[in-house]
Image 1 (cartoon, helix red, strand yellow):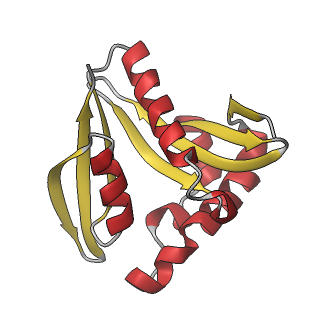
Image 2 (cartoon, rainbow, N blue to C red; image 1 turned 180 degrees about the horizontal axis):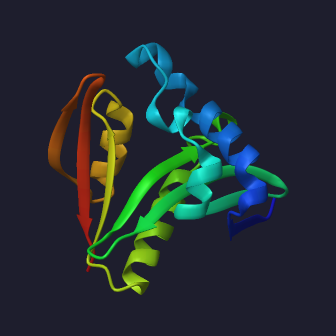
Amino acid sequence: MAEVMRQGVVDDVDAITALTRSAYARWVPLIGREPRPMQADYASAITRHRFDLLFAGTELVALIETVLRPEDLLIVNVAVAPTFQKRGYGRKLLAHAEDLAARAGRICVRLYTNARFEENLSLYSSLGYAAEREEVLEVGVVIHMVKRLA
């Protein structure tokens, strides 16, 4: 099946919302609530953030939401459809974000995740991301991570 990546547009909001909700649903029992990406207003976000959508054939299988800031590129959301997880799509999208950052002249990429998402923390660490700080919120602890680009 051919893989194609393209930038998201307003017409993709429903698909972005559905994919994100399905991808994050597995975390609800662990933290007792919907993670932030499940609650996001993607109709608004699509006008302020960049969304890169990865398709296998005609099916949306993964996405990455980023914000290019003056000092870095922030990864706001990486979501992979449950039936397509463990196939390297998340890694592919993270590499894509790092490439976007480098081409824009940024020296680092930042992201954040829930401290209880150990699988995500392990993946990010294996890809060269380091914990930069912890943020304690009413609903849990957020780990902010950074990866310096060569």
